[in-house]
Image 1 (tube, rainbow, N blue to C red):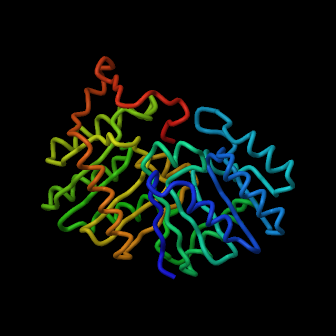
Image 2: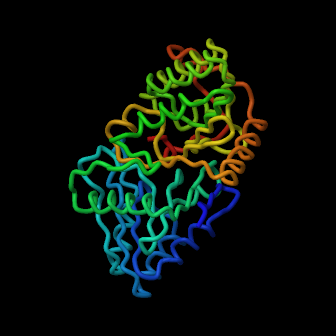
Amino acid sequence: MAPVLIVEPDDGLDPVLDFIGSAHRTLRIKQFTFTDDDLVDAVIARSRAGVDVRVMLNAAKSGGERANDETYASLDEAGVSVAWSNPAFYVTHEKSMVADDHTALIATFNLCTKYFTRTRDFGVVTADPAQVAQVIEGFEADWGHHDWEPGVDTGLLWSNANSRNVMAQFMDTAAELLEVQHPKFVDTVILDRIVAAAARGAKVRVLCGGRHGISDSDVLDTFASLRTLHKFGVKVRKQRNFRAHAKLVIVDRQRALVGSMNIDRSAFDLRRELGVVLDDPAIVGRLRTVFKQDWKSGKRYDAPDPLDPVGHVEDDFPFDPELLHE
């Protein structure tokens, strides 16, 4: 089975509901934020249908907010096996599901209504046996609060294990074109890789979200990084058709990297994150089509001086305190 791409908000909730409904024996869910009522009901329905369902939820966001308490209580009351994520990680930002040990969904979106209606996001359904097995291994380790390191290279990125290295090496392969769609830029290793691609002659396009969703602690690095990219000839635009939440890198029109991790030191070093490298022509082709649409609808973005807060105010989208990029 070839991998399947989900594009949000274009594809809506149905592909995720279908994935949940495809589970007939087991369903594992690991999620940063899970609040959509239809999805909660779908999970409960699979449990009542006799499926062995286990749901792992992030306990608290980095700012202390506990978005999942109500969902935890609802699932527990319905008899679904639910647990808080592995305390070894500052935050569990992974967004994954595994149905019947045969298919895995790896996503950039949380299971909340806004990520199917207001943000640009992606999901990938893979049936690759090695990838599915490794997602299960990661789930079981975190469920049991065990130490775990991903073994053989399966094309998956894991934080806090190999994600920075894999993303950096992935960008290093760009010979002609590097396209990056990310909201945060808070890791100098990855910044160096983007600059290096431009320096060796590759065309580099960076699509960001500007100030929207960037915490006060991250805005200095993000603005400074975007300004640095400009100085090295990188084209930077701000997404305007949807809120920028996707985490996407495309190399030479042939390979793509999609995952939960922002370009952020803590995403690489402190949090549980999951991503996947893709080379399926149909999937990469659709990702490029979406990127080009978002790029065309965006506008040139000149990041303000990080030390001048007067210039930090942006009103493209209403402020959403629940949409701060982790």
